Length: 113
Image (cartoon, rainbow, N blue to C red; front, side, top):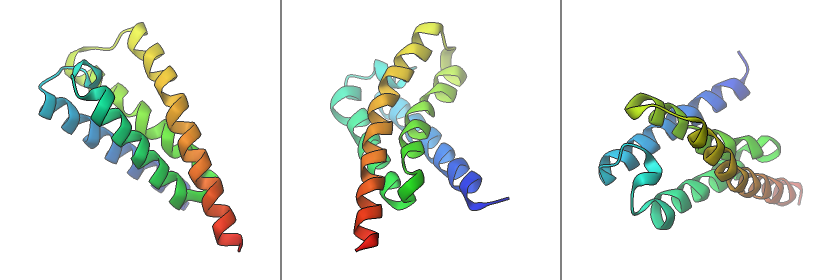
């Protein structure tokens, strides 16, 4: 087993724990039902995606997707997941992927110098 699947699995586990924490702290069934989701939890997820993207460099883009999509198992375990939840998560993942990809490109350029 190479390091890429291991890194992806570690990111998935970290993301699930992150969103479980967000739901528990907020007392919400779904992470985005929390009042703090838009001004604290989601921006923090994007920041984590950027940091993970920076460390993964060329493969950094996947970090944003994994961290945002890790909300899906949390929602599914806590109170079911509908089509609307999947759609919203796909839209939210675009930002995470973009930020992680940008951070990865910055890391590649800094490493090349």
